[in-house]
Length: 195
Image (cartoon, rainbow, N blue to C red; front, side, top):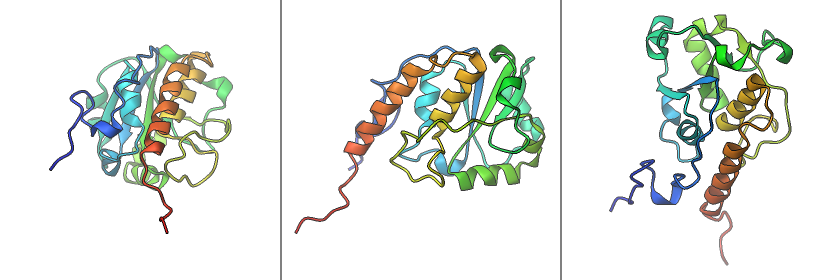
């Protein structure tokens, strides 16, 4: 018998985040490019991010031409910046104002994000924004490659705060995220067996 789904988020009721979704206004336009393997992952964070940010779109694909991406993102005067680490990333003092930015965020495991970069070499031509480590991630329900690596939601929030020059703008969203992580952690099956 199928589990009942929430009519709002279409997730099983045990993983529903609708009561935590809080609108956050940002001048930054965000496009989350999600690897197809992440689209229905039960522990992903991009859906909550998309639900809370009014200026956010989700794109699910493994490979796109630059022209296909531009048709998806639509016309506009904003410059697309890729949120991804790299030696050619702009120093934080050189980032543009929020209202001129379309932030492209790759969503998936680090392996899948690197695969998106490999399959879509035109991404290498985009100006890149990298984040300075700010401490350990709250995203502890999935293993990361490095302790300082953030979830898609956390990284996007940090980038928005940087671009908006407001370190507290996304605090309500991060608070909702922390509540959601605690909820998911409580529903994980125990790894210890009873005697």
